[in-house]
Image (cartoon, rainbow, N blue to C red; front, side, top):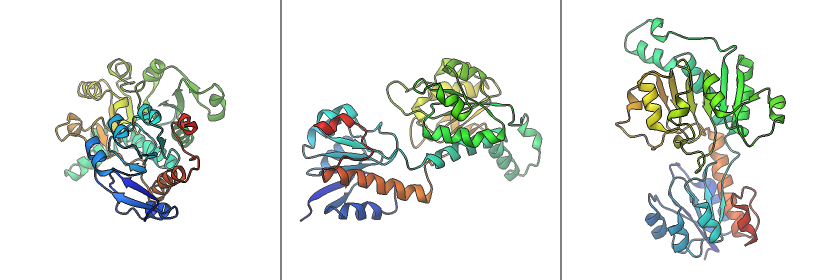
Length: 324
C-alpha cells in the first residue's frame, strides 16, 4: 500500500512520467483528474496528501473539505489559483516553480516586441493574402535610441533588459520594490509608472497577479501612452484592463499590443482582439521549451515530495506555514 497519495488536479501534458518518477521515490501513488471547479477537486481529492495543480481553482472550500491535505504545488510561477491565506490557516504548504523558464519568457517577450516593431505578423498575413507591399507596415522605426519600459523587475525582466540592450534600447523600469542599485548594475533607469507609460516606445509587463496588480494598467495608464507605442504582456492577462486595452486599440490611441496572456484563457471567440491586425496573440506559451517543461514537472513534484517526507521545500510560497 502506498505511503502517500498525490492528485494531479488538471493537466495538458502528454505524460506525467517525471512526476511519477519523483513521487515513486517516496512511495507515493499518483492519481490523475481533469478538474475545472473546486467541487471537482473536492470530489477527486478525498484522502489525498498532496495536489499538483495547473489551472484548477484551489480555494477555501477545498482546504476545508480536505483535512488530510498537506501540500499544494502549482505548475508555474504564479499561484493566483490558490487561496494562500486559506492554505496557511489550514497548515497546508504551497509550493511553486519560480525558476524554470526565465530564458523562455524573456525570449518570448523580446520576440513579441520585435514582431511588433517590424510588423512581422501584419506583413506575413498580407503576403499570404497575395499582396506584396511594404507600405502597409508604415511607420517602422529603428530600435536604437527607443525606450523600452519594463513593468516589474524580477529575474525574467532583468534577462529581457540584458537581451534588449545590445539592440540599442534605452531601458526604463517601474518597480517600487527594487533598490536604486539595480540602475547601475543593469544599466536601467527607475521611474514611476506614469512616467514609464508616457515615455516608453515599447512596454513589457512582468508583474505577478494579485489584489494590488489586478488592472494595474487601466484606462488612465493606457491613456498616457504614445500613439506610436506598443504594449507587450507575458505576465498575467488581468494585470492589464482588457476592456480598456480594446478601447485604446480600437481608437488607435496606441500602435498595437502583443499578448501571450489574456484575462480569460482561452480567449473568447468573440473577443475584438482577435480581429485587430495590430494585435498579436499567442496561447500562453512564453514559458515553454522542452527543457523548461521537464524542469517544471520535476521541480513541482519534488516540492510535493519534500513536504510529505518532512523536508522544508526549497520553493515554499507561504513560508510562515512551516512553523505550524
